[in-house]
Length: 162
Image (cartoon, rainbow, N blue to C red; front, side):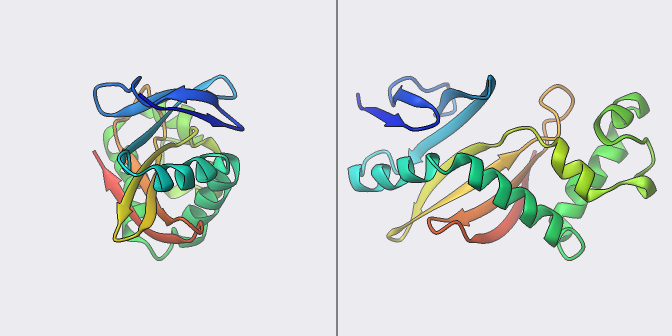
């Protein structure tokens, strides 16, 4: 068992993970899950992950900005949002996006509605990479939009999980 202390989340114990390997934390009274399963056997890499976790608010803003800036050129991002319009009821679409019609969709407004992301860390070669995982709504959608970043907070790619 290892205990770590972060600036934003306080202390947490790596033994207290849920069934998917995520550590349950809270940010502004909103549940947030962080996975260190990709680096959990390397103390030096975990220390780097803790540094990154301390940048959670900045990571959230960088990821949202990347989603907005790459919306027009990324099929993954466009499909993530369009999928909701194809599968959710009109009332829910109005609640989430302000309109049931995709033609009225605004990526800027939608990015502001994204719930706080979960983070999943992995080690690729000798570098830490992580996914910033967003859901439009934990109540209505299981679709996840991932913004993949490196340890220098550079956006590498986008992915979608169902």
